[in-house]
Image (tube, rainbow, N blue to C red):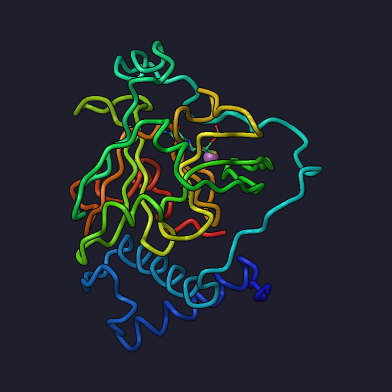
Length: 262
Ligand SMILES: Nc1nc2c(c(=O)[nH]1)N[C@H]1C(S)=C(S)[C@@H](COP(=O)(O)O)O[C@H]1N2
Ligand SMILES: [Mo]
């Protein structure tokens, strides 16, 4: 059954309405950051929180649109990092990722790590979806992988877990504090969403290096930068304050919205 989905424009309008009622009513339910400072950045952050709540409320657990095979018209365009050069990644790649282990830790009962063949032997899901990059291009591609929910059920999240963080092998440039590694995060609704997968296959082939080998995450209701490639580790956290610059992702740390729902 398809629920009607509002356009992004309608959501932004609703979000703006919501934002003004937050200011008027000081409603705590919408106040994710829980602080009353009135700096512009906080107001922008609150607008993003409201967009988040409005979308969550209206869209719930709706699926992102899936397409027929005939819509796959070109390869998935490699973007951002396409060939990581960190020594750790180069060593794994040289052995065709046979030594790769995905570690899953943080606020979980039983931390685990998975080899590629273990992941490939778990239940899998294949979906043909559209990837939208903020740079203005899209690609329809077929992704195959292990549902993240299956892994989360195995490691058992602690009640204090609120977000899932994906740590990547690649760094884009480097800051004064050393290399800035790519990372991303999502809430538990997106983490447990049926289309959220740890993808190892692309268009019926093994996921190539240019698109994130050996594992990249698909979070299909989010924009391109929320689809992290080259996953090194997964961490369940209650806050991402202490990770990177504290805003939940590499591009979020540089001004993009954390909630990039489409
Ligand atoms: N680790 C990592 N993940 C990443 C990026 C990156 O540079 N490094 N770029 C992001 C952006 S902006 C986009 S559009 C997509 C590109 O994925 P693709 O190369 O498979 O098209 O990956 C996202 N995930
Ligand atoms: Mo992107």
